[in-house]
Image 1: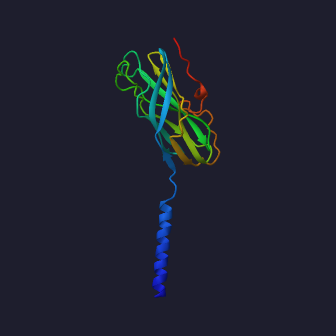
Image 2: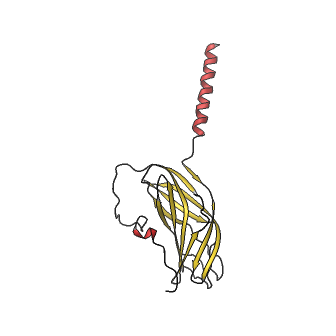
Image 3: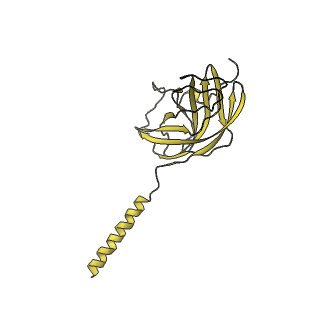
Length: 199
């Protein structure tokens, strides 16, 4: 009987150990955050509220970060033809890292009628961890270039992070100064705010 009891006890311990493994904290936590944008447009200031979702997928030694808008922002007094609008944005890094990540996306695939909220396509960029730990990703400034004009939309409600990643910095300490091909994710243009007004 003692052998059976010991076997049953070992089985229950193994089951408990398995449940502990299953309850381990996830490597990524994502949430939709409401961003209240103040947009400076060529025809004046406008406000827009849009829920934003940021997701991260492991890609090589880094992560592919994608920023999605669930509602349109700003609008144009004239129709924007196919390919006339080019969006980009910044994402503020926090926690174990700091700075900004630039994300970009394709031009509009279909014409956008006048005085209609502009639907922003998904914007993506590659994030390579410089430090290990939990890194937060918070929506930053959205920039819309269309028909020779620039509209900048800045969050004014201090939104919280939409994504938290538990990252590990790549070992080896290889320098990535000035690598070819990356469109300025770590270049000098990351902190430059586009100028508005007549061109």
